[in-house]
Length: 467
Image (cartoon, rainbow, N blue to C red; front, side, top):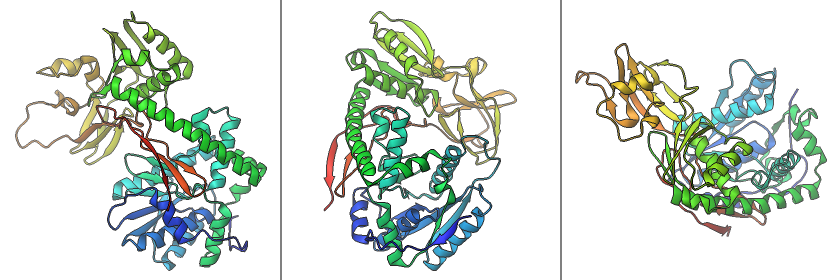
């Protein structure tokens, strides 16, 4: 059973001035900013919430604390209510988000983590909150690096956690990523604030707990040095990938890509692999790229200047003609027809954000639907066939991505309020932000192919030293 504890370590607090310098790296902010804080009730997240509250009040804004109740322990609901009471005492807005439904029998920690971020991001998106703060610390970064090293991760994995991640709903900030946990406990002691210890943080059945126990101070320092070194290498690779995408890649709003092959053939092999992995994940609507061996095989074929024809990989079909490749969604394994309620917000095929204006039936265009569409769209037929379309008993009513709508009475309501190509990840990544020692941060503004964008932009990298 978890218990509330009080700091007694006498550690030097991480104060408001240090936190303000940490937040400066994520500027600019809107006027009167609103910050959401992921608040578990543990010492790290409580310290972050109090620091963020003091910071934002001085700027005319407010903090919203979000506690996810996973429902995995008998005490979880009581703990969430205890955190809510602490927030009421401090006049901080607080909401409890519940992970409902059956829990998986395996990979429970990973599934719980995914559910937590899904709920947090969803709440921020629904309420227009632009910044979500999470309380990962220096020790968390070290544990992440060591766990990834044990799994054989390369440079990208050993870079650890990014200090800033941008998502369609919100940007996730980690302002404490180079802050020792003991200093946060010192901040709570100075504020007279209790916190909750989760017993799972001491359970040796979990790999992260075992790693935590093996790390001394020197081990933490060495892992963080690795993260900084690999993070700098990752930033350099992301810049190169963004520049390559800028000269070779374009997207259609119908969810297909065109790739000029000559610039790719001059790029290093590892860069080509990351490029194709990103393109296929975006067009295929998947969060991850295909396996490295499959990407290498595809790359060998595309390196041949006489390559022609087509191949399939990652739910995509790659068609090569005259020095260019057209990448479209394969027709296999498309979502089955499904009804949508009025106002329902859904992600179709992992790559289209759809909002229903009126009750409707959503299904792929398909060959039969293509025969109904006139005049023909400018987009390739192979890109149109897998698109989401609004159907009724007489056939296709609407295919928003190509601007098609069957003739209907003027008073007829729109079936889809929104239908936008929005893949899970950008092709060239979302830019790795590297927390560095001595209260400084290296930020990379590497250009990205954003979900829904037609082109890629180059980027630059600069060091910002905190004053």
